[in-house]
Amino acid sequence: MLSYCYFTPNFVLLQLNMSNKRHITFIVNPISGNHSKDDIPQMIAEGIDPERFEVDIRSTEYRGHAAEITRECVNRNVDVIVAVGGDGTVNEVARSLTHSNTALGIIPCGSGNGLARHLCIPMNIRKAIGIINKCQIEAFDYGVVNGIPFFCTCGMGFDAFISLKFAEAGKRGPVTYVENVLKEGLKYQPETYEVEDETGARRYKAFLIACANASQYGNNAYIAPKASMKDGLMDITIMEPFTAMEAPQISIDLFNKTLNNNSKIKTFQARSIRIHRSEPGAIHYDGDPIVTDQDVEVHIEPLSIKIVTNPDAVEDTSQPNPLLNVFSDLFNNINNVREDIEKGGRKIHAINKLMLRKLSKL
Image (cartoon, rainbow, N blue to C red; front, side):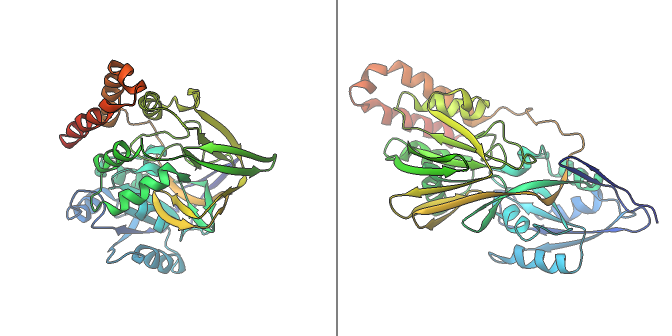
């Protein structure tokens, strides 16, 4: 028997045990995203090396089923469990793998795919299966908000409010998300928060507060462009209140990885924080919304989940981001009606309608 395990600071690379097959279970969420998953079993059969891996494919039948399958597989010492779905499926599988020897794999099939994009997992399903076939495994941080694990981001304020609207919409996809942002953004009232970390407490009036383990929400919207999943720290992003004229530039910065340079953004890092607000409200973890009380506690669990990574990681910028194009158009239109906006913004609603018509054609 020949096997290797290399350790360097903040890094674990596990190579295949060459004398035994590794056991991989694929958990497919058939209703994630907007595309059929019927051809995925055949893609897996064609892409995974049968000489090196023993493969099982399971489909989820109800909410929470992925977590049940994952716990069963961990108890059987399955080597890798692959979440085939969106961010919700990935979170459900991953939170049942923390502090275990079983690694998470990802075949991104959702509407946002935030963790997969941060890790440079290809959006192409066959290419993503090829990453699983290489089976390079590393240890990463994950976050915990009020006892619930998250792997990309959690937060409160406008992003949690929109997560609730998104969940109620009945449709998935980036177009639905941006429709809600455009409809609700100018009506949303910022709140005042008390944020306490290791250095003390400060008060902020904020449009949103995001705690990021990874860099983005999904769809290449970078709420914390410099976030690392291996530094034992969260990147906290506080978005201060802004005007209608400032909103499109913030959106453009979000997609251009330049949000940290915006004057309405305050950022810092922390291992743990406690946030107090005046009343109960929504928070989200990896885009899933829940309602909690006034106090929210968030911390990082360092290097406590193993994930199959891309050994040749290169960020996929081959496809233009249609959402960025929409927000760029919105920015240009708002600049053209600056005087009207300053007098009350009557035309901004007409511009929103124009943008929604463009979104409906994507």
